[in-house]
Each structure stands twice: as structure tokens, then as C-alpha cells.
Image 1 (cartoon, helix red, strand yellow):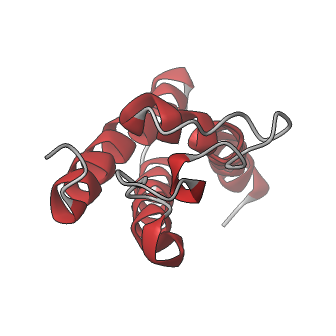
Image 2 (image 1 turned 180 degrees about the vertical axis):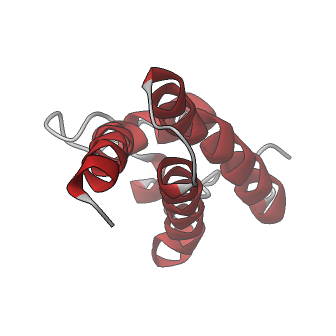
Length: 119
């Protein structure tokens, strides 16, 4: 693949994945109100997973397996969006970034339901 085709796709991917890596822990708190904070503000140190009583954050229970699956699906969606054939421009980059809250919300809803978090 010529550099002229690869560079925009990699730029799109770096932007999308960077946003996801930087905001995932904060998004966890947005979805579950579990106490997680930003990466440089303690991350999951204040998460309700550390409390003796339930509820416990669905993305943190069981060694974080639900959170890992949600994040993996976000990455797959962003990689697919950025590497899909066709022109890469601002709209594609925006869609790749928006895959984070869209897929993350679906993963959060699934994890919350599977673990009975909102019961």
C-alpha cells in the first residue's frame, strides 16, 4: 500500500485509539457511576469494586473481563472504521472516535445486564 493511503488511515486510527485509551476509565464511571476517575486522577482506586458491599462495577468484576471485552470491541470497531476501503477524511475520523461511546455504551449495557448491576 502506498504511503499516501496508509498515513491517513494510521492517523485516523491513532486519533481514535488515543481518545479511547485516555477516556475509557472515565467512561466507565459515566456508564456505571462506580467512582472511577481519569488515568492521572487515581483511575479505578475509588471504584466501587473495592467496597465490601455490592453493587460492584461490571467492567471491574471477575478481573475486569467484561471491561476487557468492551474495550476490545471498541478497538475492533475503530480499526474497521479507519481501515475500511475508501476515502479517509474528517468524517471517517469522527465516526471512528464516535465508535468509542457507541460501542462502549452497548458493551456497558450488556455487562450491566449480565452482572445484574442495576437490579
